Amino acid sequence: MGFTGDFKVIEELRNQWSTEFKQKPLNSIGENFSEACRALKSLDVNRTRCFKAVVDSRLLVEWLRDTIASTQELKVLVDLALISVGECPMETDRISNLHSSCLGFAPLIFDLRESEEHRVNFDHLMKACDLVWKAMETDHRLPQKLYDTSRHLEWLKTVKESHGPVAMTSLAQAKTINFIGVYVVGNLDTKIDLPTDQGRRLSFNDVIQLTIPLKDGSEEVENKTYSVDELKDLQSKLMLIAGKAERWKDEVEQFAKAS
Image 1 (cartoon, helix red, strand yellow):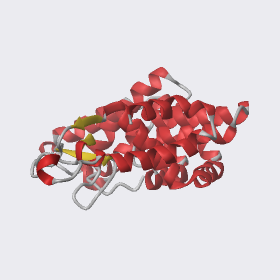
Image 2: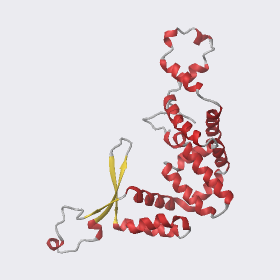
Image 3: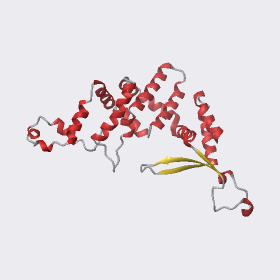
Image 4: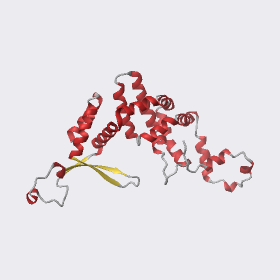
């Protein structure tokens, strides 16, 4: 999967029959070597199939990493795909496979990301795999579902491109607002006195605001805010989207009632 962190312990395991390795003193073999042996020993046939499915589906995994930031955006893509297929059973099955396989493999697809400051090493990989093994216990067909999704990658790209980034972003925002959005009502700017003192009327933007608590990489919470005008703009976009499919109307109506 192209990880560039520390995998030296795996290299040592691969070379354990070499002359160089056999000449090493026993005290040079650390606990990390033993832990790696235990981790690899736990890889039975089903778990090995999981690894192979991810490697064989490399093009799909890379596309998902490049175009979708999280499982939340994946759920939005699933909703968009459901709009495109209508009631076609075969294509509905494709979307079901996309949803379940990508959620099951999410720790490997979405969570293991490298940056200049962070490199994925063997320990990170094994911890992510522990979550995948738990998902595999629930659904033993996860590898096959990932293969099926990978075979329909071009169709998936077409679905995403047909709706465009506006639909993806708008629905993702609505889902987040419905889930954790908080309205603040009152005089938002304490520097502004009462209207009678200012000689003007306060607008809705002066007294109503929606906030969403967001965590950055350092776990610090920063609030994303929406003004009334921004909420109306989002509502207009959602109405256009909801007009294409009955299944989204509940989500949009919930947002519309709140806004």
